[in-house]
Image: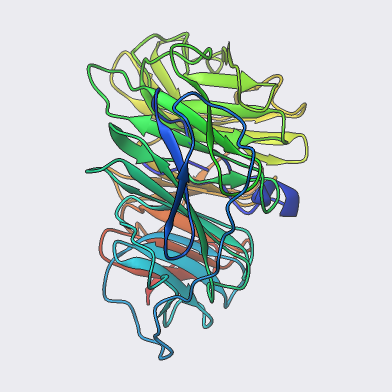
Length: 394
C-alpha cells in the first residue's frame, strides 16, 4: 500500500479497477483532449457535461526493439512473473521477460510530463497513467485497453499542483483522481475530481469544505467500492488522536474523520500518519506510521474485517518505513529507509521478521506471489524469487 510511497497491492479484479481519484484545487477547469487536438473546456463550477467529445486513439512512440532501460524507474507494477508495467521520467514502459528488458509504449503525439506520474495497471492490457505539468497546471490522464498500443487522453487544468495520486476507475469510464496542492506550514490542500465518461472531469470537492481538513501532508485515497472511499495523510500535524484518516460513503463527495486507537502498550504516541488501505473483500489492511515522544518510529498494519468501519492495531515493528506492499491477506513487505532492512509478514501483520540481507531502501515494490517480487531503489531494479530473502539486480 503506501507515498513516501506506499503502494497498494494486487487487489482482486474489481478492486484493482477501482483505481481512483485526485483531489484538485478550487476553481479549476477540466479539459478533454482528442489524441491530436484540444477539445472543449467545462465551466469553473463543477457541472455535468451535456456532451462527450470523441476520443481518438493515438499510436505510442514507434520503438519495436526491446531495450534495457538505463533511466531509473519511478514506479513498477508486475501483473505476473513475466509481464509488467513501469514508469520513468521519460515515459511508460512494458516488459514481457520479467524486467530483463523494457519497451517504451509512451504515446508519441500527446504532450505529457512523466516526472511525478502515477499509474494504475489493472492487467497486461488495461492501464491508466496520470501525469502533471506543474508549470502550467496541466494534468493529463492516459488510458489504454490494448497494452499500450493506443492511448486515449483527457485533461484537467489546475494551478498550484504539488503532486497527484494514481487514478482510480471502477470501469472504463467512471473514475476519481486526487490532486494535492502545494504544502506549507504542516498543511496541504487536496481536491477530488470525478468522471463518468472517461473524458470530462468535474470537481467533487476540496479540503476545508468537504470534511477533509488541510492539516498534514496527504498520501492518497483508496476505494472499497464505488461509494465507500478512504483518504489518508502520511504526516499529520502532531495531534496523537488525529491519524489523518477519512472515510466517504457517497462516492468521495463528503468525508468524515476516523479515529484510531494506538496499539496496546504504546500510549506514548506523539503522532500517527496513514497511507491508503488495501482491501480483499471486506478485509482491509491500513499502514499506520507511529512516532513516539522519544522519537522512535514504528509501522503497524491495522486490520479491518468489516470494510473499514473499525480498525484494529496489530504488532508494532520498529522502523521508518519508506514503502509497504500488501499482496494478500497474509503476505506483506515493508522497507526501512534508514537501515535498508526489509521486513515481511506471513500472517497479515500479526508479527514481522527482518530478512537477513539488507537490500537498501526501496522506493517501490511489486510482488506477484509470495516468492516473486521486484523493487526499485533510486538507481536500480531488483528481483527476488525467495520472498525477499535475497535480491538480484536486473
